[in-house]
Length: 524
Image: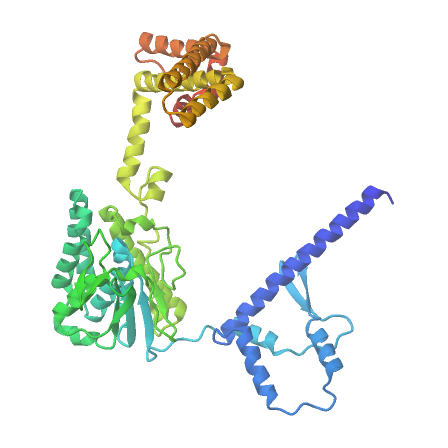
């Protein structure tokens, strides 16, 4: 057998071994996931720890020694997996020579496949955490609307900061989230877009929303159910408030939690200390020692309820269009309903999740607009490209001329520096430093050497300018620009591109040397 055949056999064996290990790891992860689901989300470490604790109280048999432990460990590790590519499934088999395996893990995996996820009871107390989000609060309003419809707020406790505290207070007070969202979309968003001061008047919008939509008659419902988080600048610590003396105290506490300077004004004094936005030190507050369900409008967060579609994070500082804000509200509502179905709450099997937010088409025209999320940015980009396209005979030509002048200046400076003698530069610089450091009375000598050095530099620049002007590449560039200018003057309604008016050499030189020409050819 030749060396090539041996090498090929070795390569195939190595690849097969690598694939087998990959499928073995994937099957092991799948088993671990199924075990966690069947054990009520307990980890394998917790289960093994509990089993070891039980066995510690039992008497070990006399034959239980180190060799039997080693044999048992080898027997448990002797399970291997084989990947059947024809059936696209994995089969578990026993290692040759090992004792028959009777593990409860396989039965638990089968039970996990057969039995659905256990339903959660409405009697258990749930703990929710709502993060900050600025103008993305409308997403959390949609989440609260879904929780309100499913009656999950009746036996739950909430903690929130910044925009999150607005959501949870409104939820516990029984506010109408459709009305709140209507005020935000049709009143506050247009006001924020109306002038340059609009985005900085969020405190006025906040106070107006609380006074209009918060049912302050039900303020007693907040006791023990709602915790508002804000930041103390005086103590540089996070404060948590769950008792509200009166509606005014509640309003001041909520404004303190939402005081994101400069959008919501400057820090102010509350409870004897200066306060600022709660998200500064704790943007996703959690209940201590209690499993907490997290809600966040940040698509990149690890929250339990978060946007299922891309949402620009900077929307929190400056609101998008009104229809995008409505989409955020619908998306939060749908994501919360989907979460209820996944958790298996009573009645979740009858939930019908709308698809208005999931199928929303923002009608973006460019990828830039879709990523940035503001249509005025997209319109500006399109207008710039359109200007470059419609007035190509003037705008593109002028941009090209300016670019050529810049490149010419760079070439002249580079050539001048290349022609300046290194010896002369060192000599002149050393002489100037010596005159300055040795004696301050050599002013005339200093000016004389500086003038000589300047004259030499100007002469070198003139020579470099002559060299650049006489170069072949600059000649071709000038001819290309002149050909474009002649074509622009002779054909007012000509084809919107210049390629057919240039020779192949001129076109290639412009593509290589001009960024403006490349951009014009690509975008138009």
